[in-house]
Length: 171
Ligand SMILES: [Mg+2]
Image (cartoon, rainbow, N blue to C red; front, side):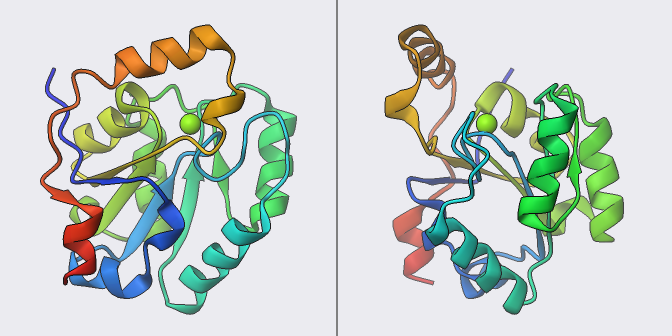
């Protein structure tokens, strides 16, 4: 297995529609937990909400694909974000990534899959032919110790990205 995110971002909300346009990304497929919402809170943070609003205004459509198995929670998230939330998706399966591409009405190469977990989010995106953006988890500090350790280990096979956040700012 060879995972190569196209971009790694520490703060997703620094990503602007003009940056996406510069790299040929016309739509986004987001992971849910720890990418858009802090896990177990069911709350959308104000700065994330504002950023998502900016994406909509900038003409960048997005949809969410989650591995969370709690269907009631996914419905709540859908209401909160006001876009479809597909799941449970069993990423790295590409099945719901393909459904999301159909909803976006965009070819995979014009879409970036954005998530905090290489072995699920990035792998599914890469397999579906999308661009991939790895982000830092929203609430890393609050995660239980073992999960934190597993996530650290999970990131080890991730190779150096093709581009960095700083590169994008120079576009
Ligand atoms: Mg996640």
